[in-house]
Length: 507
Image (cartoon, rainbow, N blue to C red):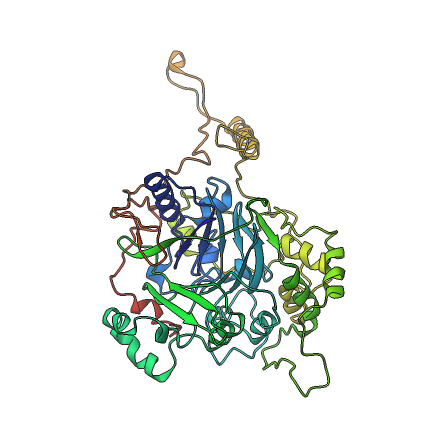
């Protein structure tokens, strides 16, 4: 299977997909799967941007909303984990993973899936010791503290991943495992990033929990992002197993943010996402450990009076499989839970946008009902005296039907027709003075406005060189033409990225 790995996406899906297309055409290959290692920024509208912990100059709507609304569809199956710059309110709706758009799948706080025999695991967020033991207490709308703590990893997810016994092919994390730089060219890394030296020497560069998972699970590949540079390492474990580690840069011109790899897969299986039975059973068995309080929460261990080893037995996995009616295929049940951004949104309206209230996601509700598990968002709301219910009007956004060759959905035409009829009724009620020259009177027309597919895709030049070997670089288009909306303004990027962390110190 041809898999392309991406570092920090930062919402620029148009550039990423355009780059993939250019690689396919240049090398005459077909990319089967795109993996993104965090900072995906699945912002659907300005309300989502208010839930993102970044400096104001980085609050750009970018291009995800086009894929969320159905204006575009991801041309390649896409799987991603969360980072520390996300629309956390949206991702919090999907704690166990789910579709954020057609063909784009989020792994959840932590998750394991199977794609044509390839087992992919991931851990979303970054490590901060002060929040590691706490429960999942955050709920939108967030204050300035919870806006950041919501994307900090928790001990429950790490504990669950440690219960896995079967081999992992690919593991994804946003921040690097602590000590990984000792297995690669550290001298070259410090030449490019000299300000890493102090953190490396103090053992603070990276995530301690990820380091533990690296040496426990021993995956064949481990991919990360976060530090905005490319770095490769080869980790040889005590039993001589090898993990190939690769960190990639963020999506910008002339940055090393893409990498193509070949991973053997089962040719008899279709390339689609399936649940991992062992992982689902671990979730089911540890549901009682879920905590939504802002207090330290400790996982069971040797010497305690309760069960602490949740590696599933055959019988336990059979119970879970029966709950799924024997099928592990992830249902393609994406539904919108908020309206998508519209390019002609007035600037005044964007400035008045506020954080939305917490919502239930129908995908999570269905998943939890099937496995008899708890939805953290529902538990948090109940704790605060609010009983959430599914929003029956969550489909209030424009979607494009795959079979509609015109590029505009029937729902859009219906909404447009309704708007025209309403406007005609209003015009009939308006009393206008008689024109001076009746012979010059023409028929009154009602403007339809912009169609759902009026936005043009971003352009870009083809990469100058592409190499499919594991540690060779893939470059972005050297001069991408970004079509930025008037309400956002042109993007400005600096060559150095240190200031992106100034607000939260979450580097």
